[in-house]
Length: 159
Image (cartoon, rainbow, N blue to C red; front, side, top):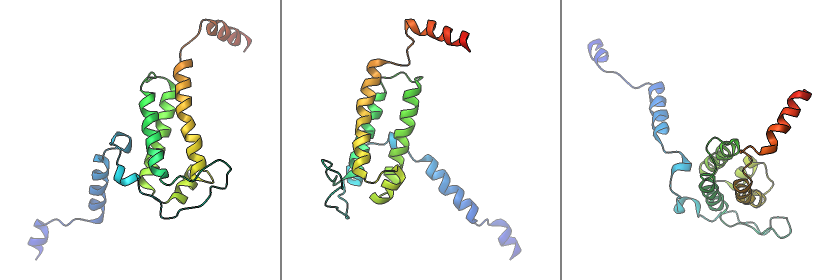
């Protein structure tokens, strides 16, 4: 009996957990996957009649809209230099939003995670992020201007 047990190794819960973590590590991150229409374009089973806000309509498939906005933002950010802090911060924020949207199917729980009363309010402000990316591409705040060096010198002397 002892010879048999010595030759065979049995999986412990720790090794099973490690295997599950390795499989999860091999999984492609949400932001690198193609848009999955079947997963996100599923109407919510808990339809509401009103958002409670004037001129803010109920969104029947909020997870799909969040993912589409996210992919759009990530695509627009490619035109901004990789070293720009705005791009780094915005990419991380969008990837986090995409991860939550992918993992959480309950809209109420998503509202809590995003810190908004309604998912429609979050979508309203998140959609404006696209306009902000366009504005940042146009204004290029990561580039130094001619007057910036003189202004920075005055600040350095004053302090």
